[in-house]
Figure 1 (cartoon, rainbow, N blue to C red):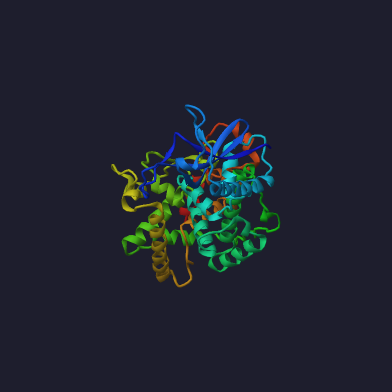
Figure 2: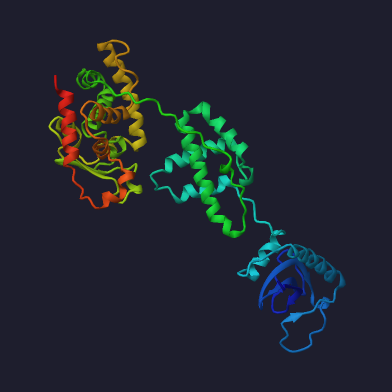
Length: 412
C-alpha cells in the first residue's frame, strides 16, 4: 500500500478567519493524502501568510511551498504520526483514499466501539410498525435499566448475560426471561450481520451462554359449569359487563384475541380478519373466517350494529388500553361470580382463558384432532407447511368444530 502524505497550501483558497482581522489574508496548511492517483485532504489547523511561502515560480501556480521551518517541522510531526498509524493498517483492495482519511482522522485503524443500546434503539426506530415491536421495546427498556446509558458490545460476555438473566428473574417468570434474552440474541446477531463486513470482530457470547427454557404451567381449562356461570351470572358495573362480553365473544369465536376485535371494522355473517400476532409470519397473512353462530349474534349486535365500525377503537385509545380494561373487568367478574357460587369457584382468570378452554375442550371433551384444533386457533402447522400450499382454504371444518363446542357448552 503506497500512500503519499505531503503538506500543501492551495493558493486559490485563502483562509477566512473571522476572529483575526488582518490586512494580509492567510492560507490553511493541508496534509494532502495521495492513494491510487486519488487525493483527500486533512486540515492541520495551521496557517501561513504570503511571506511564509516560497516565491511563486510560474503564473497560475496553484500550490505554494512553505518556507517557515517551524510550520514545516510541525507538519512533519503530524505526517510521522500518520505514517505510524498506516504501518499497522491492512486495507482491503476495495479501500479508497477516503477510507485512509477516515482512519487518520480517527487516529487508529481499529473500528469504533459499538454501543449495543444505541444500535438497539436504531433497530426499534426502523421497526415501529412490526407486530413484535412492543416485545423488543420492553426488552430494550429492561436492558437500559440494567446497563445504564451505554453498553459497549464487547462488554456483553456470557457472564454479563447471566447477570442480566438474574436481574430479570425476580421481575417475571421463565417465559418472560426466555423471551427477553431471546430478543437480545436477535439484536446481537443483527448487529453482527451489519458490521462484520466493515472489519469488526465479535466474540459471540451466545456460544457459551444458553438462554434458559421457558417453563409452561399445565393448561387448565375452565369447566362447563364455570363457563356457564361466567356467561349467565348477573353482573353489576359497566367494566365487569364489558369484560364479560368480550370474554364470551372470544369464547364463541374460537378464541379471537382482544387486539383483533379492537381492529375489526365490521362483522356480517362471518367474522373475518388476519390475526395480528402472526400475519407477518405467514404467506396467507393468518387469515381466518368464522361463521357468526346464533349464540354469538346478540353480542355482535350490541357493539357492531347498526352502523358502528371498530367500536372498541372508539372506546379505547389503543389495544393495550383495551387489554388493561379487560384485565381489571375480569377481576370484578371473578369476585361477583364467586359471591354467588362460593369462594374459589373461579380463579383469577384472564382473557386468554377463553382461548385455552376452547382448545382443551375441543381436543379432550369432543375428540377433535389436534390438526383441526390448530386450524380453529389459526395456528400454522409447521410440519405440513409445504402440503398446505396445495390445499384450498376451506373454513367449513372451523365452523363445524365451533358448532360442536357451542352445542357442548349450552347442553344441559
